[in-house]
Length: 283
Image (cartoon, rainbow, N blue to C red; front, side, top):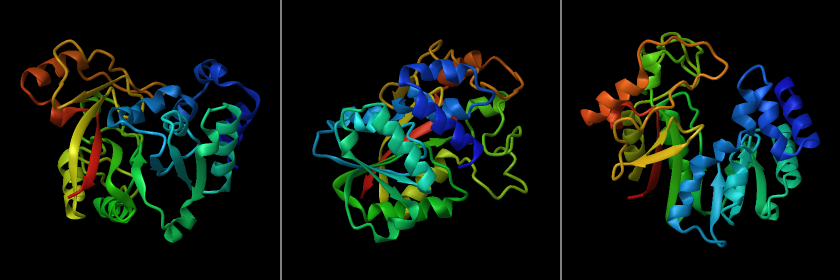
């Protein structure tokens, strides 16, 4: 285990879930917030609106250390969570069992290395935080998942918007830890990156899938407090919790609440939302 994993495993093994907020407050960076905060699960509670029943099967891609897994189990479904290695599997398994989720016995944990042999089909495939290097990689992942959807099944994806207002306003790029990286085209950066709405929608279409619902997590898809839709867009004054840098430095280029008000008045929120949540199904 690396140092972050050792810290997580120690916390999960020796503390109750109700103690996590106090531990997160004492952290020196945002790794504990990202991996332990119950707010992370808000992004998948959208599945409630699809009338998820006990018989549904969910594949959780890139489950990591289980920040979202518990919220999926709370839906009463059978969950298969995919992690990168045995250390992640141990931490996730320990967390779910120790936190005493009622449906802990409905969880199966798989390694990425075993995915090529996967034959099962699922009602929902969930990617709560899309982290990829290119649109080619997005299309590769979607094409693979398309083959593992039940009839009527859906893929749920939470993703950053490279034109999200917070990145104009002075928040650092989460993948480069620098200002304006996505806006400048990720010069000399070959790792994970953010994408525009057009890029994401084109990738979905290229593999024979379609976006059946586009949602707007606010302030973003990692720490969601509100979820807007094209049928219920935000109104002026509503987007007022915008200092979302936590431990990282940032600059304050302008008042984001006032800027959002202007964007809303001009019907441009769709373009400048910090994040998106896509509900996707086969054409």
